[in-house]
Length: 135
Image (cartoon, rainbow, N blue to C red):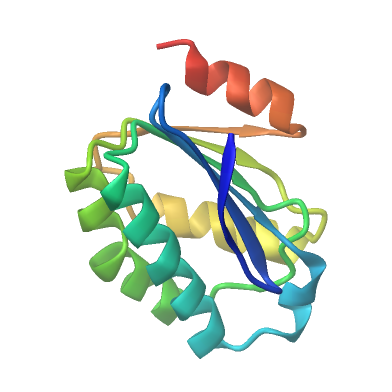
């Protein structure tokens, strides 16, 4: 995978051959506010759309940002429609070490339960990637 974006909160990689985008959140996210989180999501969305992404591997093991219900609604309205239009079919998530963050991530995905993509949760990147590659 080729690194395409690095911020203090997130690193994003692209596997063009398999149409997979991987993002790894850093523990710096515990100091992040909503505007910064939204900016990170919009940058990720741009990469996903540009690469006509089939699968996303979201490593939230280092994410320490609880997504509020209002923010979950924003994500459902302004993030997911574009990534779905880009071709997203599978979303694998490496779970956060922080239980509050993990619950908020799961609720965010639940906001989009009628969307045409599969989601599965993992405790490591290898399993998450293997699931994505099993097309």
